Image (cartoon, rainbow, N blue to C red; front, top):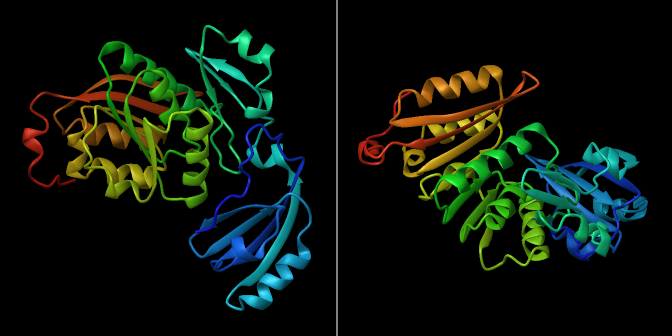
Length: 297
C-alpha cells in the first residue's frame, strides 16, 4: 500500500504524467522514490507508477532493489488525457463541484446558491461528469428531500464525491469504501479539503465485506460483478434505501429481475444515452425481518 504524495491544497493540476507500468507489487516505495512521485495505482499483481517528470533512473534503482518486479512499459501523457477530460468547475442540480486550483473568490461567489464540493481527483477517475454520477447526485437529492438520511454507506467511493454530496445534503455519518488504496487515499484527502472529517470516514476494503453495515441509504456506483455480489447478499436488505448505478442495459435488467424477488420497491430509474442505468429504491417495512435466511439466486 503506497501513498499518493500529492497532498498540497490548491496545487494546480499536472501538465504531463510520466507513467511506468510494472508487473508485481512494490515494497516500501515511498522510501525510495523522490518528490516527483505522484502515486501508485495497483491492480491485481500490477503496479502503475505516476511521476510529474521523467523518473527513468528511479525506476532503474527500484528494479535493482526489488528484483521481483518486472518492467513492462512507460508512457507520457497529459494529465487531462489520463482523467479523460479537462476538469473544471461545473454545476449539477444543487451542487457546484470544483477543483481546488479554481478556488478563487470569483469562482466561489458565482456558486453562492449551490452546495459547493471541492474535489481533487488526483489520479482517480470520478470528477462527477460521468452520466451515472450525475444520476446518483439527482437520486441523492431526491432521497434527501423525501426523508432524513442520517447514515450513508458509499461502496466504491472513488474520489469520495458521492459521500461528500451526502454530507452536504445533511447526512451525519457516512462510510465510504474502496478496494483501491490510491482511491481511498484520494477520497480521504477530499474529505479533508471539505472539512468533513467529523462526518465521513473512508475505509480501504471490499464492498462485499461492508454490505451488512445497516444504513439509511446505500450508494453503489460500482462494477456490475461487484454489484451482483452485493445484491444477492442478505446484508443488502439491511439497507433502508439504495442507489445502484454504473449499470449498462442488460446488467440493469438483471439487477431489476433480482430486486423484484425482494421486499423492495423501485422508486425511480434513470437512463442516460440508452446505455447507463441508475436505480433508486427502498426496502419495504418487513424487508429486514424477512431477510434472516440467505438469499438464493
